Image 1 (tube, rainbow, N blue to C red):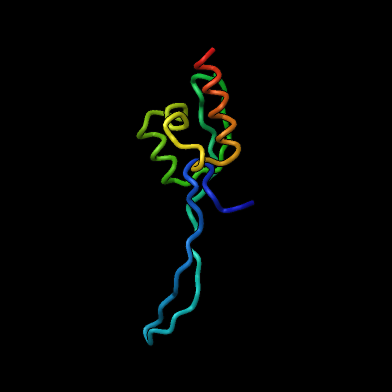
Image 2: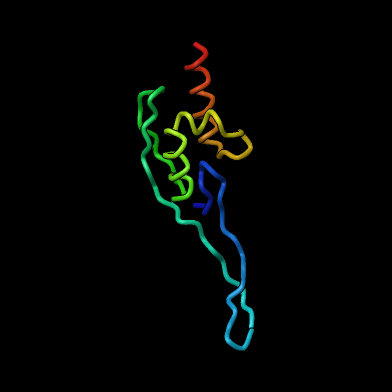
Length: 94
């Protein structure tokens, strides 16, 4: 399972551990990913996603999963989130 947030696209970053003697060794910084179940009001069902805590705070700030998906560009979303966005757009149009 990849370490990428399905809503924000936030992934691992690479940096250095720096010792007191200024020796540098490679390390990775992993995002704080959690498996969460979010409620979609428009679709009327729960959706399980693997989301970073930064992404979860952003969703709560915008006003929920539906409004987050509708305002976010497709290139920033995972394939699963893009599919949900298309379902929301169809529901809103019809």
